[in-house]
Image (cartoon, rainbow, N blue to C red; front, side):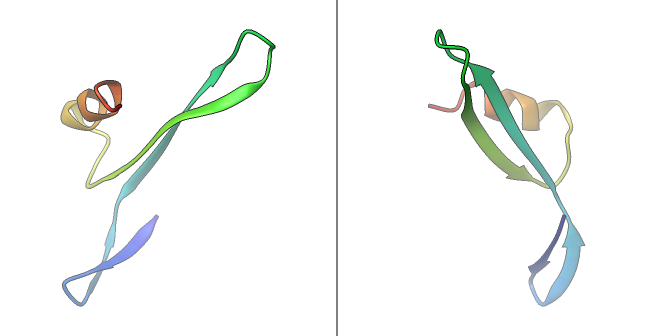
Length: 49
């Protein structure tokens, strides 16, 4: 995905975490936008409230 940052167009990663509840329905667990999909990105997603 491309975004404008400091008057420049840059690429960013947007990850949506989806889970399945006890009724079998999908639910969005989290959404994070970061500079890349590197390890800190996944750590932030896994610790999000």
